[in-house]
Image (cartoon, rainbow, N blue to C red):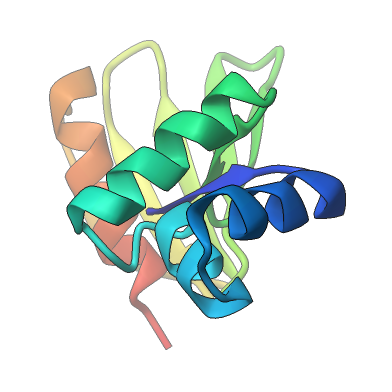
Length: 120
């Protein structure tokens, strides 16, 4: 998961001016590409100027259907079907079931999702 601090163009220009740095340095600070003391100061100033911490996440549609299933549709074409009655999970890729899990706990779901997202 990639994070960054969203600020306006005016705030970026203000940060460049008050710290005497280039646009590249501000970008490195706001995208957490730099962990220097200066970058930390730039990030602090960005938050003080209404900066918003953002996270880039893969788009995954999740539906909780009336038939007691949770279905997740991944960008790579994977469908994850979770039976909320018994905890079974099916990973379906290109229309075919590629993996079946039984009695899955919620804490284990992230690992299954991560694996499903890697299918090509």
